[in-house]
Amino acid sequence: MIKYQDLASSIQRRGELETAEQARAAATAVLSTVAHCLPPADRERMAEQLPGILDDAVLVPGQTELRGGTELIIEVAQRLRTTPERARYLAKAVTDGLDEQDPAMVDDLRTRLGSDLLEVLGADGETPSRAESVRPEVPTELSDAEVEQELRGLTGWTGDHTGIQREVNLPADRVPPLVERVQREARRLNDHAHAEPTGDGVRFVLRTGQKGVVTRPDIDLARRIDQAVLDIGSGG
Image 1 (tube, rainbow, N blue to C red):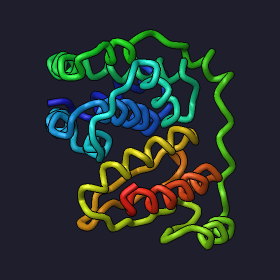
Image 2: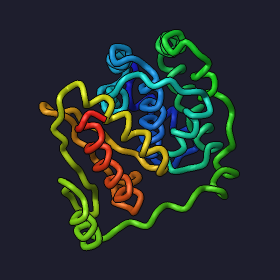
Image 3: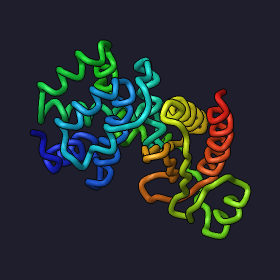
Image 4: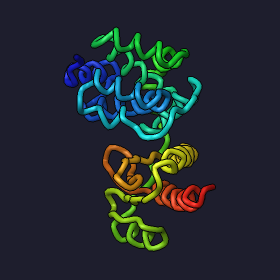
């Protein structure tokens, strides 16, 4: 069984990260990206092999998404709000850390993915010193008053400057296509939507980065989610 502290320490060392929280963010980004490429049953299998603290990263909603290696690196970069080269470096730190802790699990993942995706994630990338100089600017966070004003133009959203959320009630068969549509929209905006299954549908939670703040891309994504709910909910 993989011990979380050992894994986080390995990722922090390999990725030359300053804090354990940064190591956890890297692990979450890589594992979530990989999990979307697996069938739901295989996600549960992977979750059983990982520390419980990483369950949310692996037990993602939605059906299997077929992606190429380049798409995976881009998504990891988007999740971490960094460059693709830096993301590749951190992805290698995560995959090497997993391989150090449980080689059998990594071999099993490689077989289940049925492609070279893990090899792409484990390829060498730019070291932090070079990648840092071209890191994209982080979007400006909104104040409570600004968030409140923006929420007036949205449907069913609540929250403050630390995050916004909307719960959508839909028949079970409409939830997967909605989640898939939302994740596509999120990638287009270089943003990320956290989807949580509920008894009557799904809850979307939007916030930016490790600090947990709301930025303009989160509001833009909320608008697109509202439109997706209208389209999917009406059978589109």
